[in-house]
Length: 390
Image 1 (cartoon, helix red, strand yellow):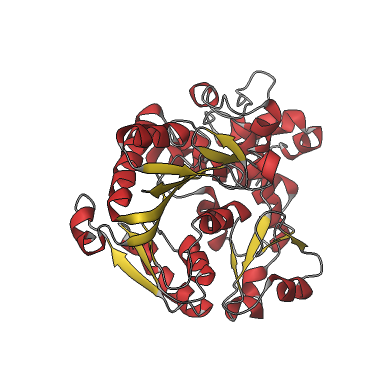
Image 2 (cartoon, rainbow, N blue to C red; image 1 turned 135 degrees about the vertical axis):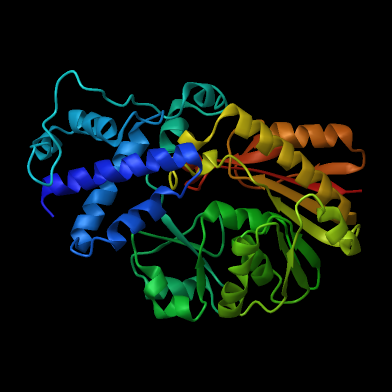
């Protein structure tokens, strides 16, 4: 592909990303893959160059741009070497006019940016940095030192004992170590959430919003394969991805349980008041993961945020009913919005007697929990709180 053709491809993909954000469609990564699946002539350098252009445009635009062209023209204004790619050639975009629309720059839509009051300018800017690649050594099969020997360029994580970091783009999932289940790709912050549960061998642990099971696998490894981790979710498709991952990891103490939305308490009635630990990695806005999914800013609106907050409160109530006396409840969201984190836990504590806040030894304190941020901790953004039932 010529440089001009790459630019036109990026414009087309950003148009698709904007439409998907508006209509609840596929993520940007998926759309990029789909675009190139029908264009076999594009080589690896072409795909990489187009991807970089797409994400540069998405990261720069606070609001959904009026068009992919408006987003990329704004990028070209700031990177003059790109203006030459708007040359009107057969496969390239038309020349840039001085008065044509440009996408505005910013971190997030104004209403959303106003909620990030706990962050300073450095932390807000870092929300749109490129994310690193973190691995979690699977202690059921190996340790971090053994993995570090496989990748000399890797560096140990500085917060989680099983974490190591590789340069972005390292093709780890094509390695023999991955096929053998020696590691999982997992942000160091996510690893810390699993560690905050302090799950011990022999315990009954419930991962209430397990999804595809990243934290479930980390919990099973922490428990040395002893005891039971009950992985629950209302999404059959996501939960179905856990079993092959658990098999590869050698995690034999995981039990999956598909929940019926609105009838979760009935499905979990046999576990009421019995769990040693319940982890709630609640559905959220994902504002802490904009490094990986910058277009998520375009998908959120006040009404959707209100629905998420209501869902989080419901899941938190359900989780509390499962914890045995003396047991632990860990609540986490990959969000830095106070409504989803500290305010959510504050409401729970105010409405429930017999629950004590337990300290966590990472991040910085905020409300009844802690906050992790890309700028301060090198992780995705999270709020985490741990409570103990009297």
